[in-house]
Amino acid sequence: MMTCIADGLMCQIIQAHNLLKRFAGMGNLIKVLTRDIDHNAAHFFLDFERKLHCISRITSCTSWRYLNMGNLLKVLTCTDLEQGPNFFLDFENAQPTESEKEIYNQVNVVLKDAEGILEDLQSYRGAGHEIREAIQHPSDEKLQEKAWGAVVPLVGKLKKFYEFSQRLEAALRGLLGALTSTPYSPTQHLEREQALAKQFAEILHFTLRFDELKMTNPAIQNDFSYYRRTLSRMRINNVPAEGENEVNNELANRMSLFYAEATPMLKTLSDATTKFVSENKNLPIENTTDCLSTMASVCRVMLETPEYRSRFTNEETVSFCLRVMVGVIILYDHVHPVGAFAKTSKIDMKGCIKVLKDQPPNSVEGLLNALRYTTKHLNDETTSKQIKSMLQ
Image (cartoon, rainbow, N blue to C red; front, side):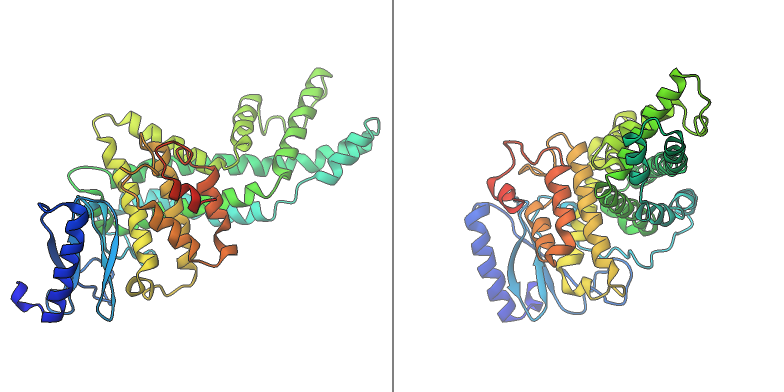
């Protein structure tokens, strides 16, 4: 095979080989695989007849970029090529195959309501003025009634958001079951079942958007706290309360815990993923964590590789990929025993953070904050000082 490679390329490969041997040890076998991307294909494609892209495989899970032959030539260096997947995941056009349709249709019933939930949350203004007036004039019954009348329908919205989180949790667990099942590897699942992978990505995209909106809207917790205090007072005074049947005490307790979280949807998905792992003891935890790390790697590679990025037809796809990448990192960090930031992690955290920092600052600050404040292992001693410094 090597006789087919041009002399110039041979020199670069020999130089790279010598460079890698300094780090990987003299005894390591350096395998050169040839790969190219058919820009018109929606799925992973190996083109042995056209340009050569070299991927060296060594025992370190670090990405090295050292070859440039007119196109971006990416070298993914991992003990297993599954850790460095290099294929295009079509988030814009993926359609379900016959084998995906059952799960796809179940999840689609949930996802079709997601945009409406976000619109309702974005337009949520709260009853802050009415509540302040009622608190400042506790003996004015009209103001008390006005505040209560303003809060009750808002609590109805908060109930709808919470109930949607439960539906989303069930949808996520269904997708995890499909994308981690044997006998296929995570990479094979994501390549074969791109429509399900797209839905998984859409759930993560929705989750981060929801939590971003929730974090910037203190009225949500203020309204719900006022509702619970007022309802409790009404019960003590045996006053019939409109809306009590809407949210009973048990539901109110669960909603209170939900909205007390800084990122309630992300917490719901993290708990759901952890529960999925614990309930499926016959399924190795690696099936789930590798699915998450593979998705993170796919998003990172698509974002940093011009050949892939040029295939996006919608400018929103970049922010979509960024959110998905951050979402799976956070899930991985919560589910994996040592998290996403350890040296043994299958996620290239330095590469992911660099991709984020290469974007316009105002567009990714929320995502960087999500990594800073909603991950579990960032501040562990096993996290390198360089990664901590990158997120400061």
